[in-house]
Length: 256
Image 1: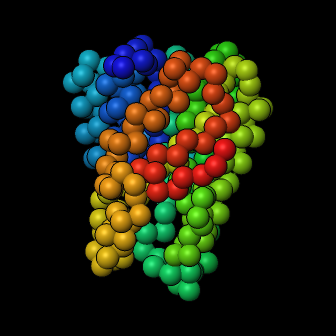
Image 2 (image 1 turned 90 degrees about the vertical axis):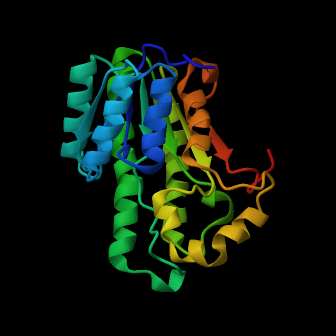
C-alpha cells in the first residue's frame, strides 16, 4: 500500500511527539511531503522533520498555538507559501487532561484548556486550512477523535465532550466543503504514548483492565493508528466523507 500519498503535501498538527510524530512519519512513508506543526515540542518536531527529509521528502517545522486564530492564519500562510498547496491536513493536536484521575478533580482551568485546544483549535484549523483547500479545488482533512464518544469518560467528562464536538465539526465541515474537500475522523482507543505511560492510573491497573476488555488483546502503539489516518487521507477513501472510523482493537464495537 506504500505510495498512496506520493507527491502530496500534508500538514500534521501536534507532530513533535507521540501520535502526531508517528502520523507525520507515516504520511511521509506513503510518499507525502510533510509540514510538522508544534507548539512547545521544538526539538521533537525538528527531529521528525529531519527524519522525513532523510527519506527524500520535503519537510519543515512550523510553530503556533492552534487556539489563536492569528497563529492559525500564520501557520497556514507559511505552509501554503512553502509548499504552494496543501492536500492533507491531520488535526492531531489536543489535550486529554491526563493528570485528572476523577470527575471530582475537575478544575476550571483544565476545563477551559481542553475546550480551547480540542474544540476551538480544531475548528480554527479546519476552517482556515479547509477554506484554502476549497480555493485550490481539492483536499482531505482527517481529525483525530477518540473512542471515548462511545462510552463517555467518568474520569474526565470534559475530554469526552470535546471529542463529541470533533464529530460535530467533522460532519458539519464535510457537508460545507463537499464535494471538493473530504473531512473525516479517526477514533483511536488507548494508545501507549509517553503521556499515557506517565498516567497514575495506567501504572496501577488501568492498563490491565483495558487489555482485558479489548478483543484484539493488545494496547495500540501510535503506529497502529497511522494506517487508518493514511487511508482516510488517500484516494482509497475517495467516496468517504463525514465518517468516524473507530481504531481501538474492537473495544467499542457499535451498531450500524
